[in-house]
Structure formats: structure tokens, C-alpha cells
Image (tube, rainbow, N blue to C red):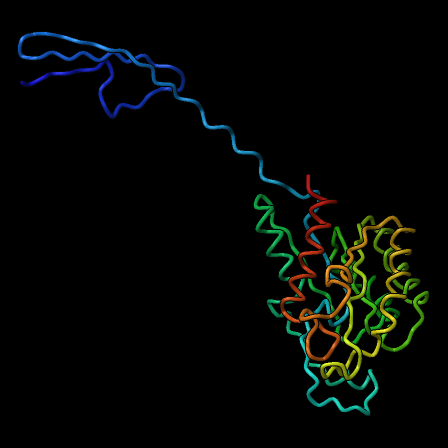
Length: 271
């Protein structure tokens, strides 16, 4: 027996936000009818939260070969070479994709989509802190960053320079940045693999890293600048995050450095 039905709102109709009462009626061939009512409620989608933003978006990564992004083996290095001699056979980093400033920039742009954060890579392989302190003012003048990410000192600890001297050089660099109205974040030294362990050929300063980091930590606290604890990020040991030469990170190690700087930037600079 056929039944005809109809509703006050046709099937497939669009409903406005709010409440709509619909009445439906059915009638059979004997003209017997039945009806019902029901309510359709449409709620507005909650507004999307605003995209996170940084208070500043122009960063400068300054340091040595670890900032530049060098990955190195022990090819052409002999047991009779000094640390300085081993560094002279290092390949020059070509700002490779795995360099931590590049990884960090990608991370920042992935989160802060309403901005275009920039991380300039100004790593200089083989540089010691005294030379870095001399180089920094010209770089700051040329690049005009808002935040300076400092990570330098591996060459100094490998040359046996005193931790206090290293901290003093870093302090001068921090003050140079602060004096120009720029913020400074300081990364401490990475763990090294001692010479000869698993073929290491550049881990000359493995035993001096902790003492140097103690001075770097005290300097950062005294200057009131954030310390990015890369040593602890690496678990306090080289593991598989330091490459075969015992000094330079692997690609995974560089990603860890970027992660550590990203976390502190998010904590300190996200609005």
C-alpha cells in the first residue's frame, strides 16, 4: 500500500545556525495520516585559535664548524697530527640541509605560519672564540639580527684553553649583542668521543668539556641570557649523535641541536 510523506523542510536542505523544528506527515491510500515533529540543532564551529607568533623573527646562528654544519670522518688524519692540523683537512661546510640553522628555520616556519622566521648561518669552521669575538661585530652590523644564537668553543677546549678564558670570550660576544639591543641565547659544548675510542681522531677536548660548560653556564646566568643545554640534549655522551671523528655531530645530532634551540625559542619568544 503506497504511503505519501512530506516534511516542512525538504530532505537535503541546508539549516541555519540555531534550532529548527521539522514536522513530517504521512498519508496512506485510505487517507489515514500520521505525523511527527523533531528538532535539528546546528552549532557554529568554534573559532580557530590564532596562529602562534614570535615576538621576533630574525635569528643569527654564530659559531664554528658545528654551526656551519660540518660532518667529518678521519680520512687523511694521522695519529701524529695536532688538533689544529686535523682541522685544516676538514671539508668546508656548504650550508648543507642538515646544518642546525637550516633545520631550525624549517621548524620555526612550520609552527609560525603567519610569519617567515629566518635563521642566518654564520658558522666559520676552525674558528676559536677570540677570533669569533673579533668577527661578530661586523656580522651583526651586516645582518642586523634580533636574536643571536651562540654556540662556539669546541676548538678552544680542544686546544686546551682555560674554561675561564672561554667564558670571558663568550661574555664579550653576549654583551656585544645586548649592547645593540639584540637578544642572545648561548648553547654550551657538545660531548666528545675521546681520541682513539671507536676511531675518534678529533676528540682532543673530551675531558675538558664539562669544566668548560660549568663556566659557560655561570656566564649565561650572570648575563641573564638563556642557556641552551646541548650537552644534556645529547645525554652527556657522544652516542650515535657524534660522528666518526669524535667531534662533529651526525645528521641526527644536528637535528637534536635544532630541537634544543627551538624549544628555548618557543618558551622565551612565543606570544
